[in-house]
Image (cartoon, rainbow, N blue to C red; front, side):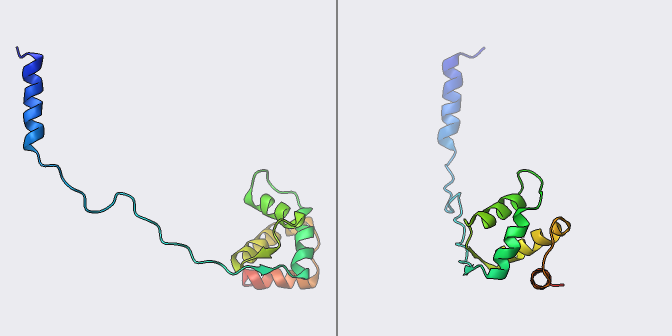
Length: 114
């Protein structure tokens, strides 16, 4: 039977016999910065579509509902192309709950690539 001191000496010998491995690479890699998206003001056509979109009923706690509320309240006054595409997607998804004008419908179709 070995004593506690002998066991500790055994592990201490193993620790000194192993060379620590140096890691030349940092463990955390920095992400590249995202390109800035160009934000442009909403047109009158987009504002009228946003007001109609705000009246639609949407599932609770969804990005669509949050986006429509922010558009209608005036928090979002400028959108990128990606934001406009999402607005067109949401407008198309809930299209049966409100009536879009022909110009607004054409705008949605253009952004969805129809």
